[in-house]
Length: 272
Image 1 (cartoon, rainbow, N blue to C red):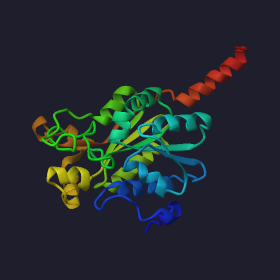
Image 2 (cartoon, rainbow, N blue to C red):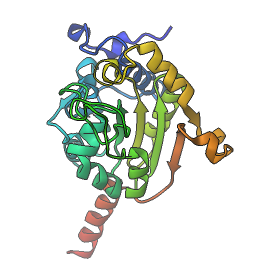
Image 3 (cartoon, rainbow, N blue to C red):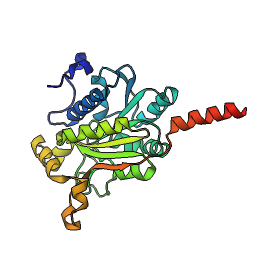
């Protein structure tokens, strides 16, 4: 059995996540991936914004930074820029990354800086009052949409691909081993890598939408998420209501800190 305790700040437990929340499963998948790759805790930094997801760094015994709402990516960009040798992991949520921090999300992808972003998508602002987030599905209820959300949701993985990220995967906490594999690949990628993690929120999302049972929400993930290879073979009718998971983008392109170092060397050589 895997021993998580060397990676945890036991003095910060019990954690604050609600019963049935999937964030702990995502945390364990990340720890297993970092351990498998032999990441040094001294050379690793975890940065978060605000929200349920962003409590994750508080439980991990590595270098951590809990920043302001939506600003985890700018803080992480500064850390990586100052010391490109560090392994920098950003933990964020659907509201934190794609609403309040939406511009940072887009430009980090465009810049292709070498960060690993784990985006916990629970379809709602869980910690701050159950408001609609940019990923709340149309028709579902939130504290700001008591009769159902009228807006179409963001495809957060598609947004990252369109903005220029070099690695994008979507996983879910029901398929935890697959999720661990996606995180492992993301950690090894040079460039901006994003893993969107579908995770249940029984309290803020499920309760308002008559699915308060954590088991039912996990069964929904089991029945809805379809591996990309199988998804590509399905008809349009079969795809209806399904979510494509797996590695959605994996390309090579120039990475920002390497390009910056190259430019400095060029200026020195040419006496600029």
